[in-house]
Length: 408
Image (cartoon, rainbow, N blue to C red; front, side):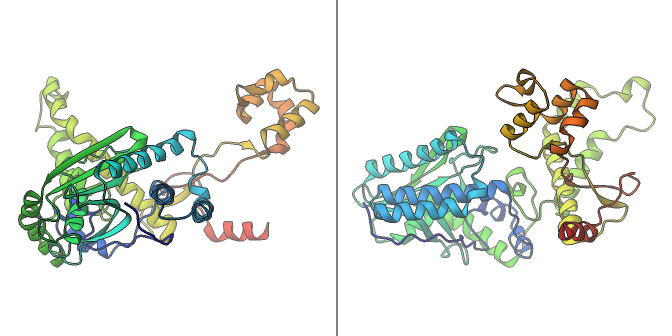
């Protein structure tokens, strides 16, 4: 069930027709080539997910006896150091969630027997040109003639079902091709583990069914996607993580048309017809979430373009958003200072932590606060915010701020 391996922390490669983006290129085929020309987007959630995968990998390799105890300790320390800023807010519940995933993998390895592959690259380019992906876990069991792929999703936002899941099926397809000796595999299984959503979903099918899907669904769509052809087809699943989602004309047109259809009044309506009926509300509600998601994606794209890439949007400017004052020392240091200034300890705390700056100012009075505590208060810069040019706040002068920081 085990094999010797070397521990290596690497960044995953991504194919144009990757398994992780299958929900896009299988339905909205031109998106693969459109995304190819756009820069990758990183987020706190994706970085946290990468950290979770790295910890899970090193732990599984230790349990499977693929590495020694010394290698486990060294690898764990390295992963922790590399991901320190991404896991600083983790609680015991987050570490327990990783154990849920590891326990599930170990139980499936025990049930199926055979060989366990961790972070295994699988290739399905036979059906999708250049197609490959990395399966978090791949189990090959000759005794049961079964291939099983297991995928860890560490996010807390979007529930993902394994049922008919394109990404998981492509991992299983790649596993099937890898062990393609005649009769070696009869059944394929896959699972998606979302431990922080308390979800483990599973699905399976016969080899014949999987090959039919690969030949009749994957191959035709992959051919169009590789050539950048086909029709743009916006949808919740296809647009969710698409790098072009904010500025895609097809998505914009669809959402603008929805808004025009649902909100444009009829010509010269009678007074009572100026208010929507419950039937109209019922027709609009299913579209609201997707419309808001598109609008928020567009706002995020505009902010990042001006803030990060020095682009300009006519009629808009970058300003500092509102920022709250905060203590510039640890709670214990602030408490000692306030105690020395005559503030009662019973007034300082909103259990279990020290009162905020605003709360403390209210408790001891503005004048007394200014005299005793203003020098241990700091007001950080607000986050950059994109606003119309008519906004009274001054525009951010990035060069001036950088020079000020350097001088300090």
